[in-house]
Image (cartoon, rainbow, N blue to C red; front, side):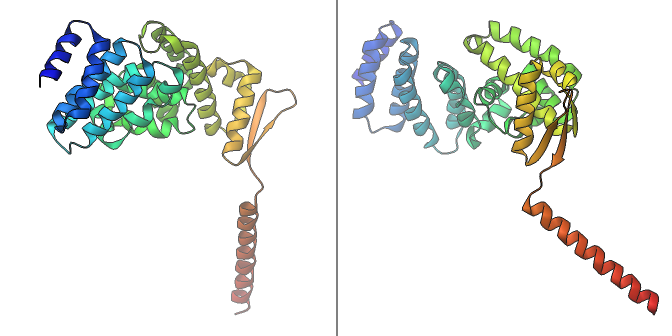
Length: 289
């Protein structure tokens, strides 16, 4: 198409604003799926360069829908891999969008590409989960990290393995320091370094609070890097989330975790007592015989 060729020439010449305008008209007029996808790639690239975030998001969504409609093929797989990469420019343009990147990247067709050819992008999926303050960060990230075995040596991968597998909390402070330095140099993360480190520290406290029935506050502070009052607040909130009760000692040095007295627990206790009584009666009957 002459219109497409002219738009491509403008794009290659750096005339992005006019190029994306013509590519949009070409998209509307074309009935050919491959041409539409080519047009959308050009629009997406142009909007990213022009730093038009909202239009970038709209073009990305339309492009993703078009790629997903292709059906299983090598072209679809390649396009999905590129979408994961270009998606960084779209999602990490704001902290609100960055916190939703994981929803896109962990879709079935895309998580396969993440596990096979886009391993290096897992960092951004984990960061997205952290920024979203997801309640199931380890549940979502750990299966993917496990599948990659030793192919993914990123600090975020190390953190997920420790919090979800080895529980070697003594290694966490050093990893958190490395994550902070990484955020300073990573193009996509440098704007959110403070929020990422805060999210990591909170994740450490929540993970630690699930493991121990007696939590020593000094150790919790040491592994998380948080002030005692903040660490205690997060720990008690996490304990409450799991229908258990956290009792803070008067000297604020320990938190003791106990089961919450609920109707379910009372019913279990009642059934246990009934079973014990029946067992006692059966023993008495056997003795009489």
